[in-house]
Image (cartoon, rainbow, N blue to C red; front, side, top):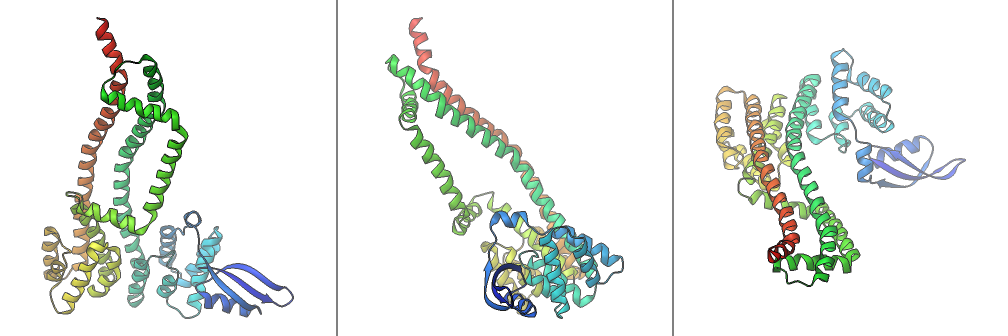
Length: 394
């Protein structure tokens, strides 16, 4: 965390400085060792842009740490090496804080948990499981593989959404140009002509006259609407409402559930492979689930504590699919539950990838047809009076 500290230093008077520390206690202790008297400590919240700019490279750090551990260095020596070679001050300070915590006698997992802004809870849980078995390097390698698989699925969804978003953006610009520039020009021409127009053309030209008369107010209103939508989307209750709407949409809600369950199963499988008991693993990863499925995780945990089998408990909490239920029963018989969890996740990831590919193949032409029809309708309504005039001359 970053703290703004006001302290009284001998010979320097009252000073105000920004410092990084695990918590307020560590910040005060470090200053007292320097002979300063702490007057106040206030946590400094980082803005969104700052957080994006100074984001800790977790995957690169983990891969370098694995390489050093495999080379025979101890954990402390590996962290010291990474701190020495780190060129970014924020990352170097973060690694140094990990070293300070470990030198104070804290486990590596506890030091990671104290830096929750940079190290996810699942990462700390993976290290905690490895500390009991002594296989830190393989555990970190499992986390790297887990994160790479999650990132692969996200990249597929993102790449599939780029073209539809591009179509929507270009279509919106073209329609905005027609309604904001072309239609007002036609409105002034037809107003001078004084001919009777079809009602749809009259409605469109009335819009053009309104743009001519109140163009600045309309532009300000559009910008205010965009800013209002951005602010609303930034609110948690708005995102929650949109999530509920998506979950209730036929065809989409079921695939959202499959996507969440795939990540859920992969996380549990990684923890089980690291030696964490199933109930503890469920408690650790239940936070990955949305509100629609989180209550089911609690039901599953209670059922397992009552002695029910894993497959029955997952079914009771509605955290299974037909394929998942069958593979869970296979895992119970073979004793390789972690492997079965990974297989379930892989199966559902492939299913999700096929659905995304099918949906984009269907959605893109429908979107192009809709945009083309909208633009064509505006153009036809603008030229309809000219067509009628040409017909009357004939």
